[in-house]
Amino acid sequence: MEQSTKWELGFVALVVILFGVVIVATVPTDYRVGGVPSSTTLAEQDPGKVIETHVEQLQYVFNITERGDVNGNYYNLIVAHQGDVLNLTMTAPLRDSATGNFYFPDYADQVVDDQIVPAMVSYDALSVPRIPGAYAFLDGEYDGPWYTYQVGLVLVLPQSGLYSPQELSAYVAQTDQAKASGLSGDNYNPPVVFYNSTSPNVVLATDPYGVFNSSVPGPTLVLRNGSTASITLYFAPPSPVHNYLVTYVNGRPVEVTNISVGIYGVESNGALVPLAQAPIVYGSPMHFTVDVDGQFPAYLYGLVKPVYNNYDPYNESSLLVGEDTGLVMGAWGVILVEG
Image 1 (cartoon, rainbow, N blue to C red):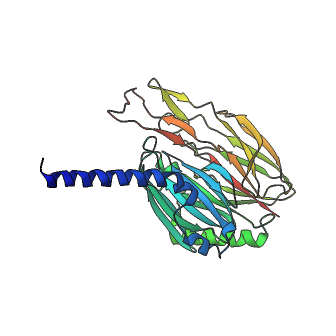
Image 2: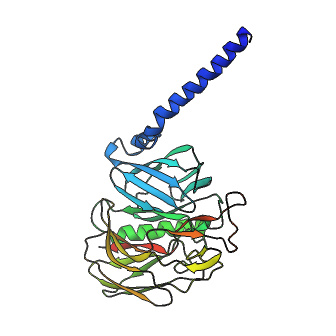
Image 3: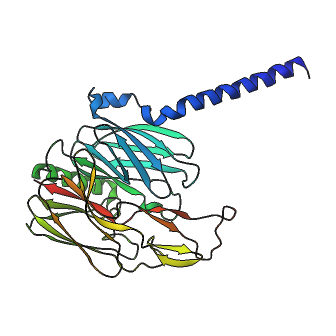
């Protein structure tokens, strides 16, 4: 072997070794440190307002972990306060995912649009809207037939207490602005429904696609503090063709039954408190009662954890010919408390 060839091979080996050292040294810090130093500047020089937010792109949900002003782990949900900044670290595993996208269309302020590629890391900083409310984010890239269900909410809580009438009025005005700017008729922008009664009766029913009131997420409800709400969730018997609540076992359609639905309080620190839960029932109303007593500024309703769906009607799926499996979460939404 010539001397020059030896030097070339040695140089290549050295480069490979250095790449390995860099990968090993940086992987453990990717999520912990994040990649957007400007996030502190966006938070008005207050590091306590920066939330380290890990977004894991799965097929077909976002798995969210937050540390900082809010601490929690959710699916398709980010909890924050006015003035916070999300320091986003976005990843996707090689298995159970595909190339996806994190798209946040805040038409009053900013649009965040980042691609998420398996085995790679993406970074961004997102200024949380200063008007409290629920703002949609979504997977803006097609990665399979259930991708339209991969829609989440940035749930912006008031700095303290409950949502004031003035804040809610400003939130509705901004929502209307978003609709006028390009989200008109789009299920990425859930409708806002106010219940002014002290004993409201809320009824939400799934359509043939397994979502409430043809919206993903379901309608954003506004309840008054001091009310006692009767909430009825009705899950229609799912169709095996277009409904994620039907999975396939050995090539045959089977209704998903090993999941619970219910009502969950959202504390100011981001903790979710189960208030009422029950195994899912199809074809019969599920009734829940919630005393809105000011303990929680917001609630979640419906499915807060995704269901596993395997679309394989002929039992022919495999790594060789292809698979269509993933976690799907469609029948859920948030409740804001007016105080």
